[in-house]
Image 1 (cartoon, each protein chain N blue to C red):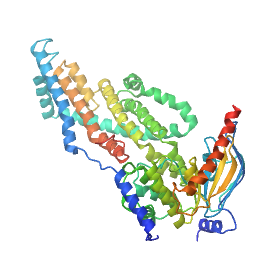
Image 2 (image 1 turned 90 degrees about the vertical axis):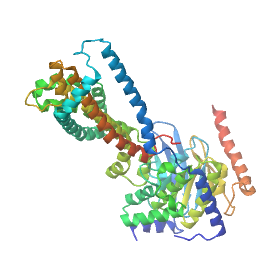
Image 3 (image 1 turned 135 degrees about the horizontal axis):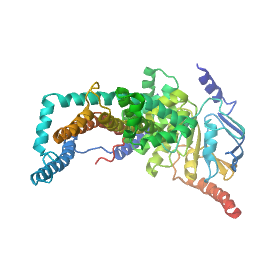
Image 4 (image 1 turned 180 degrees about the horizontal axis):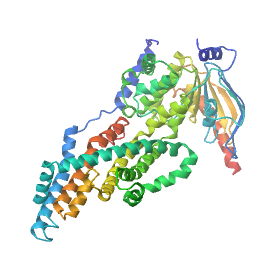
Length: 294
Length: 261
């Protein structure tokens, strides 16, 4: 590489350095901890107000106690269920079912999405069906699954897959559809063909849409699982959160039902916040897509 | 010496042109003619600017030379192998850093990992972005992005560089600096450049030869030799004088279309 020594070159180099400095902006903003704190307190206040309203409704005696227990009753029940291990074990059972179902949906939905996105006859034939399936509530599959597979794990997983696979496949398709055509042309100019074009250009470019699809796929897995567990219930099957809810209904134990709902809520939120949100944030931040930071 | 390099060497000898476009006609499907019997030779090391109004098919012509599309009739020859191409947008991949963007071009050419890193560093130094290699695309200014794109194009190690209005989206100050950069880099790398633009002054500022294309269909209307020594300035009287002449001809070309409708 040549060494630049002429006056003209030095002038140009310093001019360019000045221009680069002027046009690059330093990103500053509040620290992550402070932002997190700032985002946390409004929902906490809202939650406190909600609890207050509940307590007032309980004290006013709007409904008999068995139908509307006090927040304290539910809290006590929750604590009891946590201590004797019923709730943690139900959460574990459901989470492992949800996780396994999600992984299966991932393994099926990803290649399916690729096929729909890249193979025209498949797209024209199956694409609309898969998109349509997304708007079908997966609880509608429960009776069919029970008849087909009998009461058992197979029926539960079938419902989860029917709920989650379309989301993941559609995420892949929209991720690929949103890749700017210019990227493919650049890949072509650089000599990327077939597999190398997919590996180095198409798939990385489609990643944001795909990750969005995964996130939605998890939400659908979790919802479908709860619908399936509520109905697919037998002593031989492990007791998940859905089965716990059904038990609460059977016993007319509203506090148990509420404890179950809180458990479902907690697992869904935790997976979302601890697993998917960081992945998505990372993918978007690397690409400068996290919005304007002041 | 690889076969590709041999080709490149052959292309650089004075015997043959670096790009030869012979009687090229292009039409998309059953649509109107986009290019009509265009012939153009670009000598090795030459800097040619293609100039024309909208609809002159200049980008189409560049795509044919880049082998992204095939002519309806006629031939396009690039003896030195696949040319490098730069677009109006830098089109850097946002999931990679500046250096990784350059390295990807090398990787797709089959360059070994260690050499890739070294070569990418050299290329970034050439476009004076040695310290920006680790930056993400969104952290770079428009001018810096276009320089990374230039480094990526140079990584293809092609002796022919095709440029499709590469500075059109930049502000005037940055564009002026990049003109100077391009002239410097092209001299140091002895590149053949085919540069498409609709900016007459830019064409005269940069080119050794300016080729004016007519519109709908695109034909070679006129050629101008630019006998002004580099370094030129875009605001110099010599550049202005020739620009006025070419602009007059360009306007006459455009007027013909108003009469037809």
